[in-house]
Image (cartoon, rainbow, N blue to C red; front, side, top):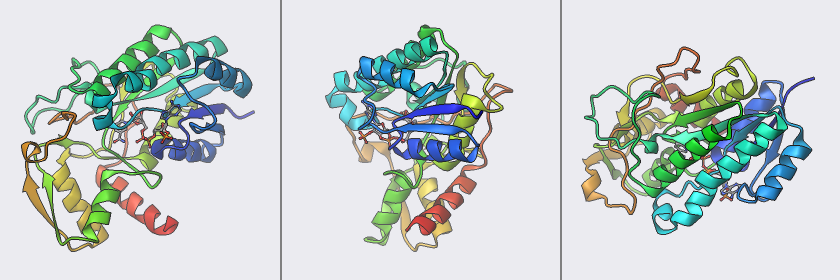
Length: 289
Ligand SMILES: NC(=O)c1ccc[n+]([C@@H]2O[C@H](COP(=O)([O-])OP(=O)(O)OC[C@H]3O[C@@H](n4cnc5c(N)ncnc54)[C@H](OP(=O)(O)O)[C@@H]3O)[C@@H](O)[C@H]2O)c1
């Protein structure tokens, strides 16, 4: 009998790809979008776990509006911090392993652009409400005591939701030049590449990995400006990418300037270079258009 994997936030950008990846791996996904399971409803979470009889849970539900979290910290905390703890305890009670998704924004990013990427054992120091609530969520999952992997990832893009790559392509259709920041550096990560790694951590080869695991696009880190340049190069779009700084583009929530993640663990799944993720994304976009 194949493993059953419950996916929360299954309607989100990553959630959709996790459901696809679970199916592709021969597992039985139980896909619960927000309309079918609100993870802030503890009774509903317990009932869903009991009903699903899942061997593993992948939590893709989150408050992902980074700027909006500054205005509503309680709302963000309920989804990103309290709910993962409740989910982790319910999963532990049901004997299901939990794979919980976290973020590079748990780091302060105060490293120079050419510094070594963050590894799992580096000190955290979130600069935003979003980052702080995601870090609290990590701690709540660990405190629940069940089998779990907390996967920190970064700069996600996929066909199932709004993301930087899709925004750049939309804007390029309207303008012939765009200003993009050069002073934020990280690893772009294709959800289509991350999703099979999460499935592997949930019920596949990597299921023995416990605790925090960094999984992001491979290769060399880049700035958003360099990412935009590569998007237009691969998509063969004639749009000039001009340099600008974060200070010139103020946003409500501060972003870590440097948030590249790599893993120091032997048992961490490794993803292809982010440029390959981008190429697969652009291809999938054409197919689904
Ligand atoms: N996007 C990135 O660049 C990035 C980077 C690093 C880490 N991450 C992490 O990756 C994970 C997946 O993010 P994503 O990019 O796929 O974002 P997403 O598309 O916004 O997906 C999040 C999903 O969670 C759902 N959700 C929100 N509140 C919920 C609740 N109370 N109960 C159940 N579902 C709820 C959302 O539903 P609605 O849309 O209906 O609100 C949405 O479908 C998150 O943990 C995020 O923190 C994302």
